Image (cartoon, rainbow, N blue to C red; front, top):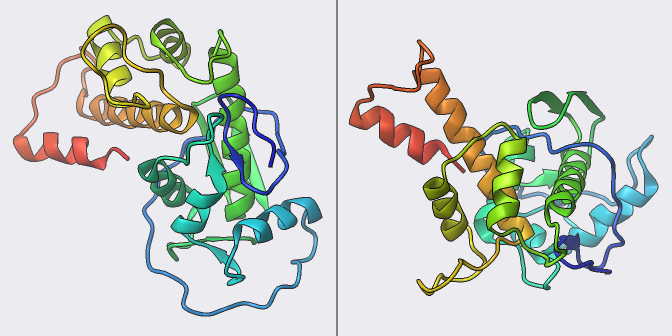
Length: 236
């Protein structure tokens, strides 16, 4: 596998980048496959993409587990993807709630950057494109090529997505998703690719939850404890 600074690549696979923007969508994983499938390439699919799939599917079961996906994905500094980010990706693209990522179906998409309607029948194809799209976004905002997103870069990214977070909120996001614990002195460590994706999805999820409760669009809501906890715990 070839790694570029700051961007994740599945191990033992060449980088296959697609154009476009990250298409966030949310779902929850279900159970796990217990059967093994024969390994013949499904018809009418990209042979190279299927080769990537088989490289990740280490136990040759025909499905990719959370453990296999985490083992395949690394950041530009060769650290493995954060497990919570991997679970989030599984939740988004495990469309049949099997608890695994399969290689099947066709892909269709409509919409534009970040605010779009996307539907993926092909779980692995959708996952692959989603990661590739986020790589483009990360590369765009990692202005200094450090392999992480820091202060001003994070502010610019959030603002471009339509989230005008205050400086204190941006600092909270940066400290929460920093790639290493903050010492309390100086700026927080930068946010690696995997944590950047999760931070953006969490901000989007919480913003949309607030907007649904803010029926008169005045920027204020009255919530019960139950509603507040539901909002907070629904974020990936």
